[in-house]
Length: 321
Image (cartoon, rainbow, N blue to C red; front, side, top):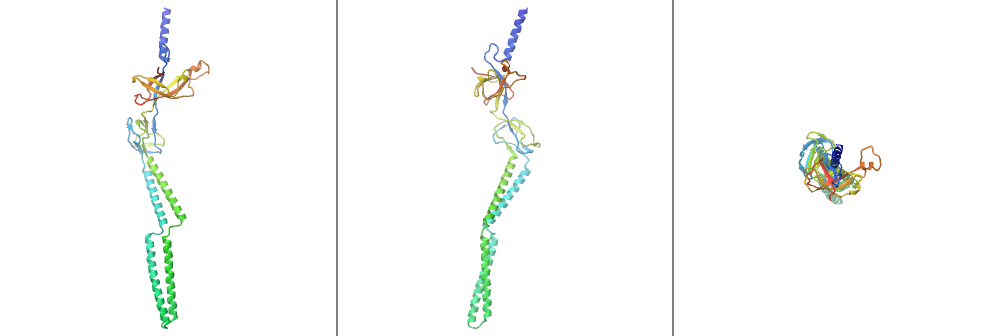
């Protein structure tokens, strides 16, 4: 009776250990249990604002550059209009300095100069006639002096207008032009910043994938850096599992493991991409030969596309024979 009970307990314990402890029992191939995890891409606005439009829903497939959401941008559009107006103003000021006075102003000076030259010619003719008459004793010397003074005044007026015309046709001084160009460059830079801030209010998909989660709705205020949606890329699935300290050295980065799970298709593989350098354990830990068996090392294995696995799904890994 006692022997039968002992045999039953021994068989039961062996069955339980076979199920719980990898490699125990008749099957010498150790297995390592883990679960599927995903590297999500969290898409967040770069500025705080109220969500104006949201074009995706959970489960939607998106491509790179696809529109996701935008924020209210009335202030940014107004700032861009003001910046563009300052650019126009700076460009006009620079053109004015580079070309001199306006054409209408120069035309007025030309007209005045033509009138002055006509008066100059008339004064010269009058003086010549007066001098001729004075030589014959018909007019007095006072009349000659008066006509000569009138010619001198006409000559001075012509010279004044010619100098004024030259100044009007000259461009501004180099220092003024340099300052105007610097003002224009600064205005253009401000316009570029305003355009970039307006563009920041519109967010597109940085990668292709599936919308996993939408965290905000239209009308809510989203803070800068806070995700509005998360995207699951097609190649972002990986398996997290733990290797005992006793077999840690038998695994290498790049090694391929066979994967099985409930309902999975056969032939799924995962490639080790990361293994932790530091062990994990459950305290208290005593650094003895026996206690080292309690140490485990976290490892990650990347999955190929199209496996059909889902985040959180439990899986089992083993080294292929």
